Length: 154
Image 1 (spheres, rainbow, N blue to C red):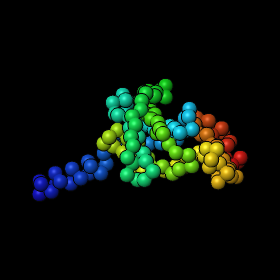
Image 2 (tube, helix red, strand yellow):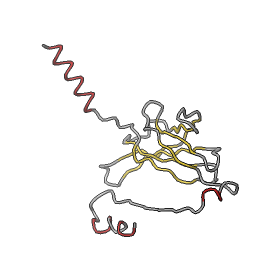
Image 3 (cartoon, rainbow, N blue to C red):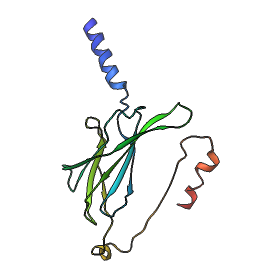
Image 4 (cartoon, helix red, strand yellow):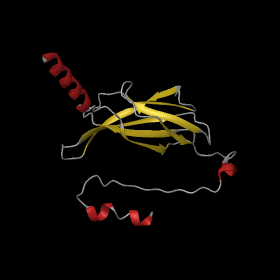
């Protein structure tokens, strides 16, 4: 009976433990050159103790990898402290689909994908283009009247 109780406690701990190093809030941004894409994410690690790695490639085998940097982020109240990670995917081909995931070498995100921007040779193949840009920093209910003002314009 005691072995069963210990086994159940271990399963409960595994099911309900929180891994603070799992990447979240993953987003892309164009970088300084057209052949580079920047990826950013957060972990709940308060001290930037984890590595910053992006793995990427034209297929899901993600053959290339690059390391990045990490900085501590504090919301000011010291109730929410995070590590923000930034890494670049470099030497990308224009108008190409790439797969990527981010993590620390042990804890990884799921695999995502994106298509790179066209260059002069591939631009006519992808015209016309449409863009939607949305920004939302409403992370609390401190200004509920302002956090939804962008939605009617979408």
